[in-house]
Image (cartoon, rainbow, N blue to C red):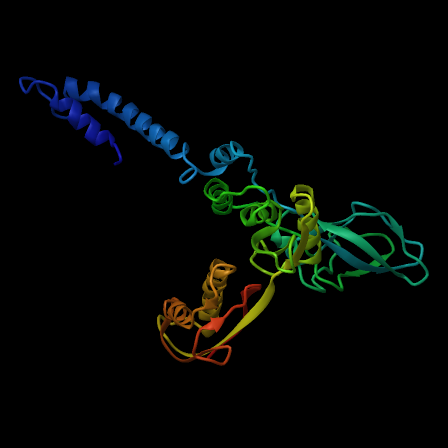
Length: 346
């Protein structure tokens, strides 16, 4: 229950004899009111202290301190990396630290190079910001924030990857309770899951013991965006588990397989919203739903998809809804995670 200035003041005035004036502006009222203000602040601080004393309700640095008590650290953001192709005059220098950019984010060149007679050089680059913002698609990088002498153009033939956001409180809290509540000992299933999820970039993991005979373990992972893990993340996870696993265990780490879910529906508009606005909102909520059920459910619910569509702001009703050309739940294999495919609303 929230303790308020008014309630505190009323309670203290109630302890003053009615023989005295207690109305606003009186001696007792004016003497007690500042005390009530300070007590309200004190009670609010006490509530914060209590809230931050438990993993279930603590946030930020307080949650980090709680997790540190059992050896769990928040996973920090990482920067995406990739290769850019720089075109220019033969003999022109490309220096480490030079900048290239997409429309939204800037990247730093990681090595010194001189453009050869082919007038094209492939150069390693890294996003200057941590997080998934740096995971740009092919051909997104095409600008020079600062002009480079003898350099004419830049492009990335392949997507940049490996950029992961700092671990959110909910994810950190989940790992805390998984360690506290799951009996992870001697390399059991819970242990492998905890080891995998301790790697920066891993969003979740599923463990298959004895998958290929005695002493074998398969760990299937997805990234922190609940998408398929790239080869670097798979390698990093495998390397970390190798440092933790019991002697004699043969561990295989693989990425989950993405299962695109395509949606078609006819909708009735409301509130004057455009088709594109409604589609963007629906895609966002649908993506969040798919993240929630990744590695947790054995199917994507047709009814839930319909509910999310109906609840989208600006959509009054819908008909002819199909998910992957059907009107039934979409099954997911043990190693599959659902991802948004195409959405066609008309």
